[in-house]
Length: 576
DNA sequence: GCCGTTTTCGGCCCGACTGTTTTCAGTCG
Image (tube, rainbow, N blue to C red):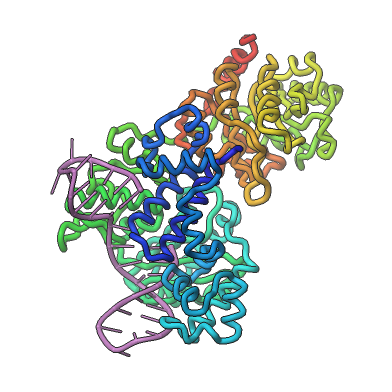
């Protein structure tokens, strides 16, 4: 039986929920949640670790007891503790905790006083006015529960980063109209460039917080004000997205920005560090007793606990504190480090602009090379190119290269067939500068067959890099089942490369696999996969994801100069 | 239940807002 890390994490979170409702030791509950978070961000399979008898207690937040429970879950598929808790409390009850406004205490009260076990029961009880008399509840709470259930039924919970960026842009513009806004920044997972965000966290410094809050709640896109106080407010926008605003004094801006950027796990780790130094960190600064010793900028907050500045994309408690203390933080790649783009389409297949238009735009954006990689013919939906079509395009590229001051590479996004062969004859592949292999079909193959398919494609002597390696579409399609670690190891052995596809709907490879590729020494190519001249904007999303994956300039293929790049591609070909 | 440059025991991040409480518990970020 295949057990994924997320399966184990889900069981740990369920146990934490049930223990919370029971009123168990809060630190024991936190231990289960910490372990679940570790498992959810781990690139390696714990089931494989168990098979290989590797030491689970090396993982952060996993001690002897939880290591034993992980072994139990990956071998039996379940956990005795969870089963026992389910005998004490109904199994559906933890769903109630997901409802905003309901925490463990209230869920417990609802169960004990009204025997409410499911959302449906809660909804009908609230409709009938049976909630308001439960101790600790009232009419307002009953109303909010009804609203929360209705809202949950209609809204999508997370949003892609590109949509979040659009909304953030309009909010920033709106706040520019307020004379009392001194500094403003968007914090939270948005600032950490997470691929999806659940809400937007806006931070403002001002000496007139009341005016700023008043201005905020008049924003025309707001459909509901959830909370409104002297220094913060929470609202829901028309798109369903929640926006939280916090206003602080200028001397606290850095501390508040640091605090609201998170992640939660990172913040807790740094606060714990501060505590050992006898310091207290909160939204207002770093305090030694009653004296504020830092807080105007983020840098001073880090310095106060003896750390160098840590970039927001690294703040996930995935080893950045240890690296900071050891002085081994990565010098994260920046957008301006990219010298070229190795994946772009034209009107010849499913793109919107001509070869010339794409090349001119890439040059205007400061790139010194661009690979044109239209689809191959078996992807009929995109009107892919056959051998004749590609030969024609190669001639056009020769002509343009003689004319333009940017190097255009002859490439193709070649279909990887079900058996791992490539969708073009060898004599054509050999004439291309770059061969980008991609899976667009047969997503449902077994893990073994999908992995073999891709590895066999990599073995073709002309294969250069693997496009969007997992095939996922964010919030729309799960990745196909594939052993990414094996593929990364095979890429290293074969000498080829993997793509980080920068489309905000893909961002594929994910951050954790970027970390894995980096640690295995496999170069990543951050590519726009542009289908129009506007899509070169994608690159900044790709760079955000690359930074989350700890990538430095030297870890990224398309930071090489054109000569270095051509030499690197040549080496992949003389490999066999 | 985890963890250790004060510790193998005794800690474990911290404050704002809401509603129901009439001084604060619960929830959230």
